[in-house]
Amino acid sequence: MKTAIVTGAARGIGLATAGLFARQGWQVALVDRDSEELARTAPGIAQGFAIDCDISDPGQVEAMVAGVLARTGRIDALVNNAGVADFGPIGQTDFARWRAVMATNLDGTFLVSQACIPALKKQGGAIVNIASISGLRGSTLRVAYGTSKAAVIQLTRQQAAELGEYGIRANCIAPGPVRTKLAMAVHSPEIIAAYHDAIPLNRYGTEEELAEAIVFLASEKASYITGQVLAVDGGFESTGVGLPALRADTA
Image 1 (cartoon, rainbow, N blue to C red):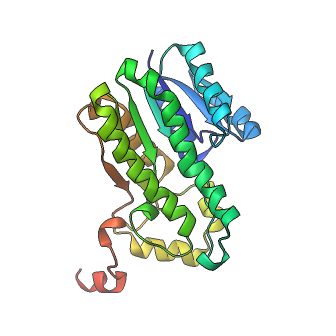
Image 2 (cartoon, helix red, strand yellow):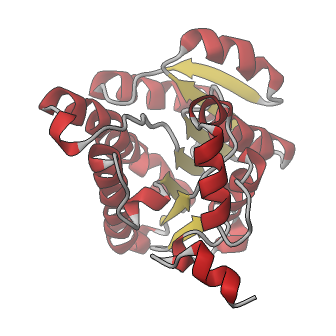
């Protein structure tokens, strides 16, 4: 049975992705550092098992991957979904805040990928890294977050270029605004309305829509796709700096 590792799987996009893998017959390692939430949600995933791990800690990452292999004997797909979001002005982003974002979003993605490469080589597996639309275009208050996600995009390209000869594919998903519980809790009605105006499809995405794209890139259906960045964003990135008011005049 094929095995997928999904980091940041206790909630949101990671949990939805783990669930979709399971429904398609995969066994899934749900990895997260929020052990309490993971213990609550992981039992709902058929063929899933929980592993507590802080992906910014090299020792914990090595132990996590060894634990997955001891249980399943193989790794066919890795989804580097775990991430932290810390938004603030450049002037108020001190080095501690910067490093806290980089440690998980970039360092963690690198560490987990590196640890999984030997097993992925045996299967000719796939890596799917989760970046963000903020890694493709500049945005306010996202100096650390956006920079970390831009680096994840470049890391993906490096992985594709260097690992393709081993049959390992590496691709990247760049989500736009997604209707997660966290986003809905912190986005004011004004922010929600502004996003709706700026997105050609006029709505947030769903966790399930992101999961469908992630699982596709991890599957054999994407067997000749590597080194790509797929924006799953309702068209948000395609509009660039286009103004919604001007777009309305073209209707």
